[in-house]
Amino acid sequence: MQKVILLFKCQPGMGEGLLETFTTALVDTRAFDGCISVETYVDADNPDTIMLFEEWESKAQQETYVGWRIENGMIEMLAPILAEPMETRYLESHPA
Image 1 (cartoon, rainbow, N blue to C red):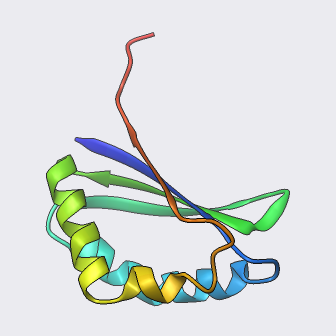
Image 2 (spheres, rainbow, N blue to C red):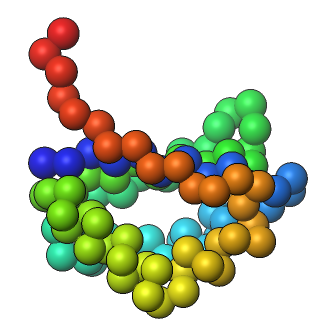
């Protein structure tokens, strides 16, 4: 199983618009082959910072999904909303 954090730092005042976009877009994400779950979080101190916590059956399936989002223009559509490029972090479980 692959856990992923996506960090979206939006232009000032644009966080709410991104959340509205996610309301529709994440329906497709959750239905995508290999997606186990997606949870959306907003930074309590900065509502223009949004995080997605994703669980996938494999990293390859998540990467296929990202490729699909690039092909369908979703990543490009986010460019004017974001203050910085989206950050992706792949997490590995640690027994500590």
